[in-house]
Image 1 (cartoon, rainbow, N blue to C red):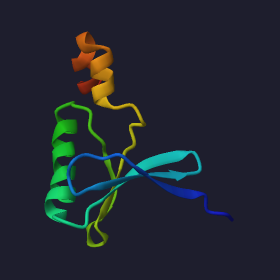
Image 2 (tube, one colour):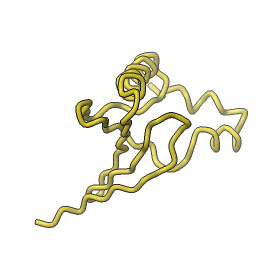
Image 3 (cartoon, one colour):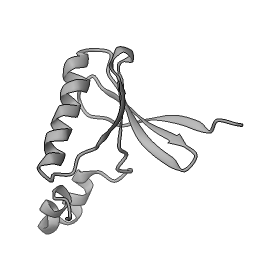
Image 4 (cartoon, rainbow, N blue to C red):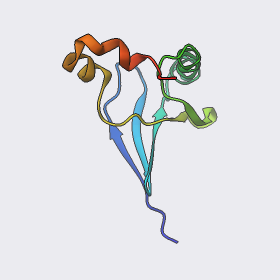
Length: 101
């Protein structure tokens, strides 16, 4: 059976983290890799996302982690950024940060 796993580097933020889109057949996720400051760049990053989700603010969910190998795997929201959405529809900006119940 052929493995169709593809990793493609994508733009990230101004931290020491590197982001890769993982595509395996029809499923995608994001691999966050951080060789420096692993505590700050992976563990705390995930903790903040959990706090945001708990308070109904949309943030990527953690799928898996390998802290000893310097990466986590998180939910993929696609290519469109929050900045682009807010810029396009500034009156509805808050909508993108709140989950629909």
